Length: 123
Image 1 (cartoon, rainbow, N blue to C red):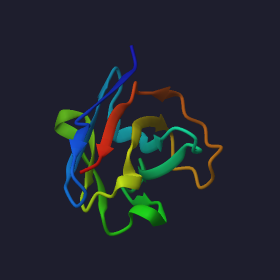
Image 2: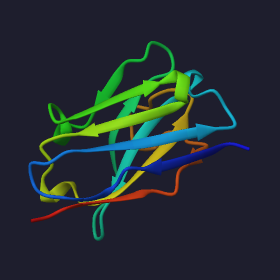
Image 3: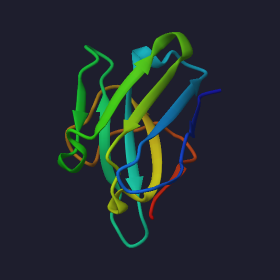
């Protein structure tokens, strides 16, 4: 059974850091691309980052470049999103999603999603 489980969210002050985890089961994570999305109330869902299945290259949205890093631990079948210098506007539910490749547009083909983990950035 294919499953993605996010964890690591919580409450953090502006300027702080969190590391989110996306633990995969039922498939080998290294063979697929994993994207991080986020959604906050009243806003469109945004793709935050993606790590590709082919060469492991990473993609980032402009609003997180220089602050967030995506990486995988193949031994643990887990993808991480290291979030530094967090801002209040980063507050959202963060989801990971599975695909064959990192899609350039918002309309990519994702066949599995996690349940999400809440990130709140507030003083």
